Image (cartoon, one colour):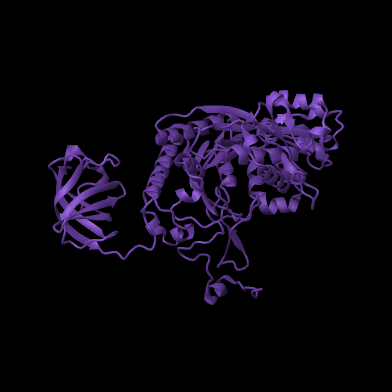
Length: 581
């Protein structure tokens, strides 16, 4: 039906007869006999000069045949690639009429997101989403090429699996053939890619669809897509190099230049300097250690295991009301309070607590933070974990730039803790990643062997793993680790997590059995393609790079999902619904 795409026409086609298909983006009258119609398809827009009597309106679908000519002098449009040409002598065929769209399709007009998702098939016509989804397709293509050029084999893993604990709730699917039993939709292909390594596949990858029943936010959806990779006879350094090559190639395909990689940060260094395990390093305001300054302080509020501070350059313009609001935020984040100090001329600190501190302490605060007049300093004293968390959030609230400012700052965070805390209900440790992560070689001995006494909480929480995260501009793109490939180590980790032998066999028996038959050392990684594409497109929300996303409440306004199912389906599945509360 067409010879060219609308956005592909240039002066090189002058004089050619072309046929185009697309939607009417805009119609402008030019006297009684002529009209200018901007015809749009996925490639862009071109101006068509049509008979004024032809009744076409916005979003009509047309086939236009005409001649490519140069626009008259002074009528060029430098803002679009086709702005030097137009189509004249047009024959117009209306392929489909359109009612007035219920939402405006111009990127210049903000539209309520629920309405955008309700009419997503119209929203997809907007230039922004067209561009984002083209970028996503390009990223997927480049990632595939990169992984295959590094010797990885694409292997598809099941979508209906057994339910296994991976940190979030499973979406479950009832079995019709075995009433009362359920499949789970995969949170990740973790176990199957490890089994692929046992199967001798050596290097596996997949652009995998995964599902997790967890609370949604800007960087989370129930359904998401990730690059999943695993390799045998490799170290964590090897895997990080594979993934680094893939993400830099993807970034280069979008931006036109290869960004620099900032290297590695240990988890502890990231927490100490940025108060986060996904640090945004595009701006300063790093956390500064002040604990030694107050070892003998008379000020009770600073007699704490940890005191840290951040400096906001030029923050002295903040009003007292704004400073009080920041204090309330700090309390909501878990701090007992927040101390602020304005830096005045001569290094004088103006603060409600200045009178409780010695001249030496005040002077040391200024020099340690390298504070200058006009700055504001923010101090928190508490347990180290609380201090880092609160100042990390405050740092982002005060200084974080939009996602598309400051370039692409890729970095690896390594040497994560093996456990992130102790479960108050069970008394057992909580894994920082999934339970298939190999402990750090220097710490594995302290965990004991099968049947040994469980180490103290201090020992467990000090144990490191061979896990690593990829971070970009303050977003965690993904996680990976060296995997446990020994049955005795895997059983010991299960034991420490309170998973008894019977439950191990019921949930993971197939994995433990596989380890009995020569499992190679292996390591892997997975990162969110939705998140990577969002950052490459300068979007703050991954919904803007997903064709048909859910709302933050998990609803689909387009199809009204989730919906009830009829009694016949319930009967087939052997299900009975509880009465509504």
